[in-house]
Image 1 (cartoon, rainbow, N blue to C red):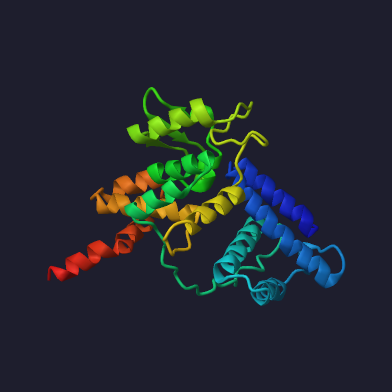
Image 2 (cartoon, rainbow, N blue to C red):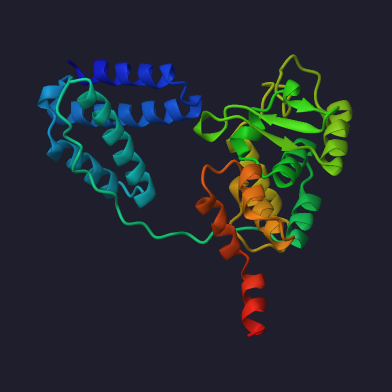
Length: 285
């Protein structure tokens, strides 16, 4: 079987299992790069029977030579391993990727904004659409993709609930709509949102949606207007929400539910991010 055919079967299996669209796109992109690299190496279409562990290893080394980060190479290794596990379970070919080992990566300190810095940032944003998205991210702790794919019907103003559909892991969850955000959203929808046929909550007149790249560009431009000397991204706002909740004494299981984390260990990192509380606790000894 050709590698290209095997990849197609694998992706169709992911669709059948209802994997999130973004996950399937990521798998497709990375496996396509892997296939193209092999076809360039051998100057022809590649059959599964021709691929060895050394090919997989050489591909990951090539990614390192390109300057790709350890986390990116680990993602490639994980996807290729998942692909070959799928093929092996169906007796299509041997699992030549079973010896792939993860790269040791340095854990990055999560960047977040204090509540005062968040107020300063929101004040500095001059575009209404970028401002309301930023407020939404901070008031909900949502991931940027969850915000950008939010539909009008996903906001229940009567019961004050926001329905997040097909989040990470293809799971749905509900988030309480607080009064402040509810008022901000109503004003945006009634006064600022362009007249468009799009179902997306956050929409531009031209495309009916908002791209992650455009939002990130405008956000960083707004940060430069402030005195905030931090490398802020959309995900930093999610971190800021989590840290703010920890400072308010919200219990970790509740924060876990708000953020949509699969396990509590992921949520617990935000306790360590709250250095002020840790410092105050040590001062009390």
